[in-house]
Structure formats: C-alpha cells, structure tokens
Length: 501
Image (cartoon, rainbow, N blue to C red; front, side, top):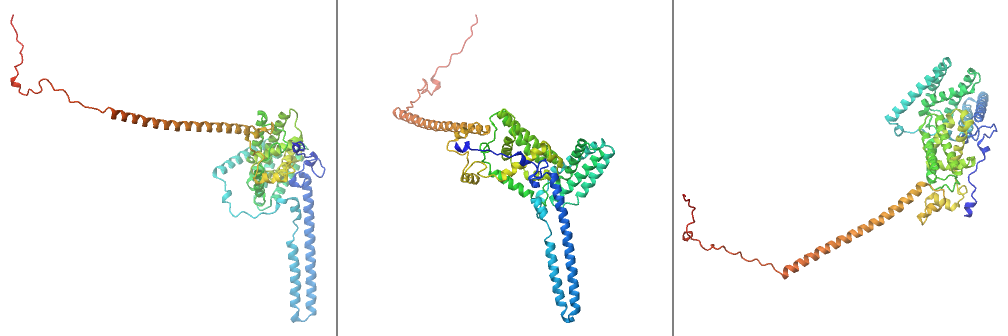
C-alpha cells in the first residue's frame, strides 16, 4: 500500500510538446523536437553547408591534383629518363588514393543527424510476398478514381486557377514516379517543397485568405497522397517496417501492464466509459486503413476525444492534460495498432505541415508520438515496480494478475475491466456446471450398476422357482368315440321327414 500511495503517475510538461526553438508551434520527436517549419529551415541550412563543403572539398582536391601534376612534371624533366616513371606513378597513386578516400567520406552527417531512419535499407529481393490481391488492387483503383473525380469537381469551382492546380498536381505526380529510388526523407522533401510552392501561389492568388488556401491544400493533399500512397508509405528505402515489428513485439511483451500501474483515471465498470474506451481503440486501429495523412490525423483526433470523454465521465469533471497522456498510453497498449511507426512517419513526412504545427490535430498527434516514445522506454521506475518484478513480468515468469485466489482479480479496486469480471463469472459458472455434471455422471453409473444387479437377481429368482416347481405337461383327454374306428356299427343318422298335413 505504501508503494501505491507513492505513485506519481505519468506527467509531461506541456512546454515539452512545443518546438525547441521557442516558436510556439508543436514539435515532433522525428524532427529532433522541432516543428516542421523550424526543421525545414535547419535542414535547408545544413544542406547549404553540405553543398559549400562539397564545393570546397572539390576545389581542394583539384588544387592538390594540379600541384601533384606540376611537381611530377618538373621532376620528370630534371631526372634521368629511365628513373622518372616510377616516382611519377607513385606520386599520382598517392594523390589518387587520397582523393578516393576523401570522396568515400562524403558528408552524410546532416541526414543521419536529422533523420535516424534515413539510412538506405537494402532492397527486398522478392516482391512476391507484398503483391496485393486482385480484390485489394481493384478496391484501391476504385478509391483512386473516386478521389480524382472529387478533385476535378472541386477544381471546377475555382475555374482558371483550378485548371492550373490540376496541371501542376499531375505533373508533380508524374515526376515522383521517377524518384522511387530516393530515400524516405528525400521523398518527404519533394512533397513538402511542392506543398510550400503551391501554398505560396495560392496565398498570392487569394490575397492572403488563409482559410481558402487551407481548403484548397486539403484537396491537393488528398489527391496527391492517394495517388502516391503505394510508393511513399513504408518505402523500401526506409526501416519503417523493422520499427513496426519492434514496436508490436514491445507492446505484446507489455500485455501485463494494468490500468492501476499507469494511474489511468478511467473506470471501465461504467457503461459509457467502457463504450468510449472501445471506440478509442477502434479509431486508433482504423487509422491504418486510410491513405491521406489528414484522414489518419482525423482518426487520432477522434480517438483522443473519446479518451477525454471517458476521463470526464469517470471524474465528473473536465479532463486535464496530465490525465490524457497515461490514458492514451493505455489505449495504445490495449489496441497494439498495426504499422504504428509507419503511420506516424507517413503523417510526419507527407502531411500538410500547418496541421502538425497548430490546432487540436497537431496537439493530439504530438501526444501520440510521446506515448509511443514512452512505451519504447518503459521501465520498472515508470510503473513504480521493482526491477526484479519488472523483469519477471517481461519474461512471462509471473503476472500481476495471476494470484492464488482467482477472486482476487476483482479485489484490486473499482477500476476493473468489465470483460475480466464477466470472464471470472463465466469461469465460476462453468466450474459449478462441471461439478454438477460429475455428480450426474456418477449417479448414472450407479444407476446402471443397480440395474445390472437387479437383472441378475431377477434371473436368479426365476431359476430358483423353476427348479422348485418344475413344469409338468399332462397328456390330452381322448374323445368319446376316439377308439370307435368302425363307422358301420353306428346307426345311420336321422333324416328329416316332411309330413303332408
């Protein structure tokens, strides 16, 4: 009890969710804690430095080669002809080796620093395992056609600008078809550059009306990302799939974490709360079925609102941010969403940056990133457990729910999953039924034995009676005239006579 009273819960200062540059926008762990705007600025600066360093390196190598050539040429004129070729070859080989070493050390520090997942993974040897079924391909084709029609219908309302937007969008999609070998971060940079250029032109056209620009950009994002989804979601040049598997294994290993360990202020015994929890789990799982980053964000937002509703109903007061994050972690652990890391990276790379920087979508998405990061670093101290207990639970040697008395599951407080309560009740009923069935089977066997004994006893009694009173069969009595064989000795029978009167 003392350990439980000392629980501190999971607390994240809201300032930690903001950009480290202090611009006031929401940051992201994938961008080293920066918002999309600051990260792009830092990325552009780093890329410019990279270009300048490459130019300086190339000029330095060129000067060294020229100096080597001049020195070798002058030495060849002063030395005898038979011995000048060997030093010349040695000099050139030395500088060629130095040049090769410098080129192989081409600067990739910027990409490694800003995107840990940008290391190019080897291409998969076979695509047979990822070949979609005809039904899935047909469904995606139908969805693509529908989105294209909706996009054209929307652009008709813009008239002339709509035709230009459609032309540029189609040209961009065609150009992206030739960039499949780029890394995930380079693909993201291409899409974000297109977003920025399109947004600047729309701002100029609509004379600074950000509301109209956002409405058009939402449609542009929907059209482009639906068409590019197959080639940019979890690309082969990234390690997103490996991260997905690692996260799923991690969440499965943490299946024993209880609602009390996370200090989640949710009472699932309340029907409305239980319904909100189920809806939140459904939304976070359904996120993977959408293609557009904005639609995925909408499911994250819907999940978060269900969480806030569950907390509000349980506490009878508005939920706080300190209550939201541990509950979100609990929902993620219960749902174990498919391809969670791929979906987070997809939203981070290809969503309209304005959505991630401000608003409720950006806030909820930032909290989801924090929840995933917390799950990856979850330890005994985070759950107020001893290191020994934590290791035993993780290895499966013990479980906090496994106790000698099954009824103890229901004695841990009011925050009990109603499904567990129902399971315990059903197990008790089944146990009672098993006992009654055993009694019925024993009674049936006893009755069968008694019937066999009764049958034997009846047979014995019948045999004894037959032996005591044997059956005697007497001869049949003969007829009166049985011995009179000669019929001629009998008088003739009387014949009726008719008298005439």
